[in-house]
Image (cartoon, rainbow, N blue to C red):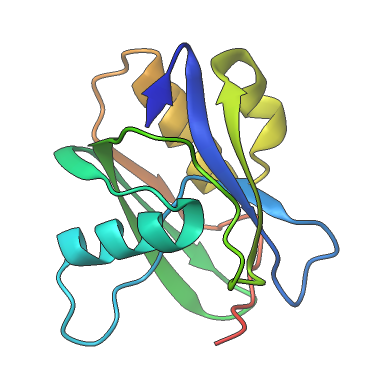
Length: 142
């Protein structure tokens, strides 16, 4: 989601990392939850915003060799009104911020998140990005 030249990011804590990671809001579907419903729920949980889902922007995938996890990210355009907020009941998300586009590369450490996002924002027509090695290992608390 973009506003006034900035992209909405959240910072999340993971058990195996000393610093929070900045990334786009989102997450994994629960059992029998469709992607659209998962995206709406994750945005609401992580930012307090109700979103309208637009078109699929791109897909990116990576492999985390440390955990043997294959990760597939589907990134959609979303729209929402209101002010995002840090969730009170979620220890995972520790910050929410509108990050100016020229600061995204420095803020987002995970290559599989950073590079496709920057490419899409710059008008790159590719819709698929692959990273044989994630370059970062994330351990989920659940």
